[in-house]
Image (cartoon, rainbow, N blue to C red; front, top):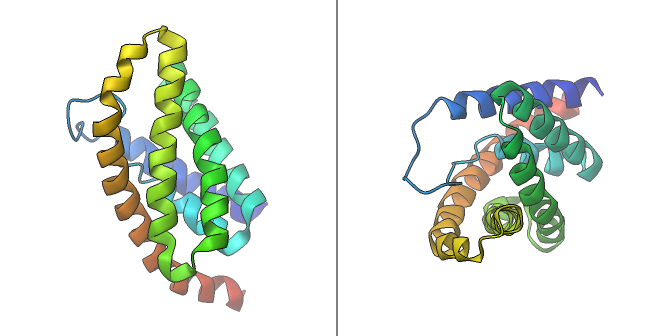
Length: 162
């Protein structure tokens, strides 16, 4: 539980810092998703239940700290789609291919968020953003996946030595 708490704190810190960065492009929902690095690391080193706990706590606390209730809805929706995709990909790819799982998860996350936005606003025309969100998901997922993949060997050794 202590490791989960520390990982949640790290993910939340990254999330809050990312909120301070200017938008990458002027399209709603496009973020780098840097806190997902922590979720991937947790999944690969500690397992799905720990990763789900860290992810859920980060989403809930992140919406509180950001003061953005709609962020809670969209983040949860995206995560409900992305997390199962990540679990499936973890069974298919190796630890040397975490970036692949991350890319698919990022695309799924954006699709889940878009689905929630369409349902909440009753505006199907929002789907026009899907191509941009898909490209941004590939780029963000690649970056976060490569970052997590680079951290795994060293963190694995640290956790083993404890």
